[in-house]
Image (cartoon, rainbow over all chains, first blue to last red; front, side, top):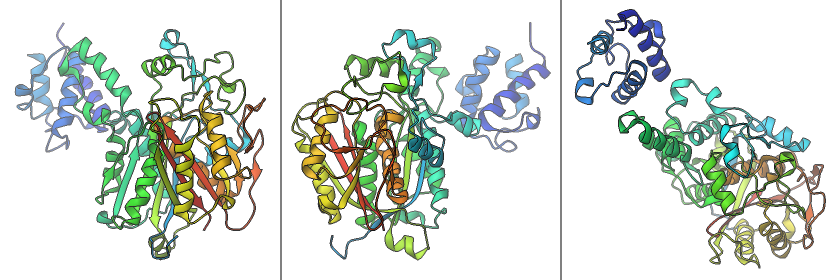
Length: 79
Length: 410
């Protein structure tokens, strides 16, 4: 069964909090990883690795660089 | 000692050990003669012949914020915690980045990360490895993180010489200050090696105690019933500083790091040389370097790991190179052996011993082995006299590495 946007957002919030210390409440769909959340490229790799474990969706490096916002990741996981 | 040489003093101490999460709690446990050795409860304990160790009293992952802890190997976590303590203890000295150095060593490096990352690689593939795997497993990782934390630019180093690594780091740091490369250097050793492969490998070398029915009694240097070392984990770091720099900023000075001796046995890859010639050479050099003679040395924090071969050789080497008078102790009887971390925590203990003028005991010496004719401090702490006094800390490592550092009161 496909996950809802809310379920994916909650999961991403948990992962991002674990990796960066940013509060899960701050992880909202419109936020940009670099500009709003100040997440660097290695942290994005960590997030992608954790998301793979959490959602069972592999995010290849050439795709990862196009995922600029939280919403982009949600869409990628839902697709 | 030549008058024009730069004097090196100790102005800060930090430690996290099997006896406590900081210097104060560790020190009071040492004076009480408490053992930090406990049975291991991990599932893997059934696969190894040694079922106990000196786990750190405070889990470093509980001390550090989660995002920081997950990017650090456990050995790096210990080092960073001890470095922050030592730096605060020294009063967070204001020093230009170009004059601040770091020398923090580990005997084995991030072996816990190496092994768990290999499991991840085999089970899930390379894509699942953390991008921080390399900085977590590299042996210079603890030094590098401490250097980043403090903004050190005068050089960040990690000397490696097995169980002498921590002491060698402190010796190297002394030389950095003496040669004029730095005014302040944070130095010491760290280790996090309680893993089934390490336990199995040391057991395969027949180096570990298997006193599984009495873990707290297993580390018993110089006792006739000793049967090998007990593995411990943690870190001990010191802030070293030129005397001039310390005085100019009004720092509290614990002791002077007055003399350094280093040698190599060139005898056997793991066995100590039976006459202790390399060990005596290191101690003698440390005293000469400090401008001291054997009579000045009132205390030795011995390397003595509770192995059948090494303990008596070291005691006899102390007797021949220093004399029978110093109060000798092995704090490994309580902390276990921290490998590369040993020289770090034991330097902290030697400095505290001089500053507090009390020698922690060696516990579990029920039946002193024959041939040990130095004055072993057994069961209860003993006081050191007033006035100018000096002590030596010994650390030796597989490979035949010997380091002796002489500390004095100021």
